[in-house]
Length: 307
Ligand code: AMP
Image (cartoon, rainbow, N blue to C red; front, side, top):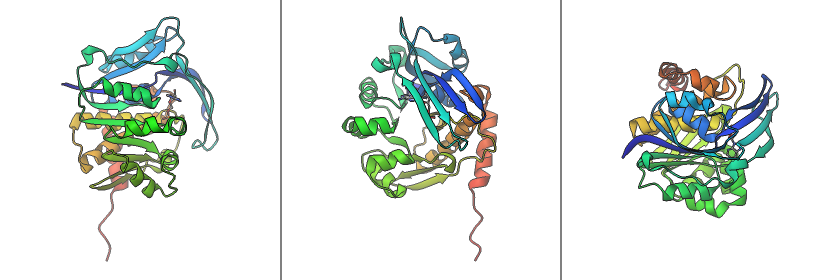
């Protein structure tokens, strides 16, 4: 038994250009964003790999926040995963310039014995066979969530479907849901994903928010309106991290519990967009998140019918 949230994924250096500026070799990666967000709610056990070019001091803020880095392998002579992207004036449009997997190419996720058995698990975006390897090392978690991307849907579909059958929640963006199911209608696509085996499917729609489908019903939330998007990199991972961090703190997997957690994920995603890299998540605190949660509550609530 452990009260920590297990997060497995990439730890990277990102080079990013947005209409608001540029950053070279900034801290990034799916596990990094997810852990930075989740640690605002709950202790985190992180599993990832970096090269010996990685400045471990970049993660000091994580240790200070209760993120356990015993599962972060520092590969001697290896180079850290690097990703580079550029955003158009419409920041919803992103082009990947380069992806250098480096040490992430032969990542062999290993859960240290000291992590114990974490009941809530986030499998960040990576090769489905690696997600499977993580599951083989866990003991009956209560709630496993999985993220993926178009690359794995296109190249390792069968392996991905196998892992999907073993998880409770799939977090996917709108275009990936369409690609995975061949359904152009998003509601139908989400239902097809639900038929693959999970208890809940969360579909991310960028600045248009997010919706959740499960047997008990639907939940939907808008994104928090932002007047200035500095860098949206990692918003999807910060959403997942915030949502799972909040879920791990309550362990309430009902529709209402998931709706509340989804609102906290929306709050951590909005923070991420307001600065480069993990900068905004680093300086945030629970009060800031509760403030955003309450703003979202107001935006999302409706008065009774008028007639
Ligand atoms: P998002 O903006 O939520 O799609 O996440 C972007 C983050 O994902 C960046 O910090 C990248 O370092 C990381 N990333 C990009 N491509 C990959 C990949 N193929 N595998 C794992 N992580 C990736």
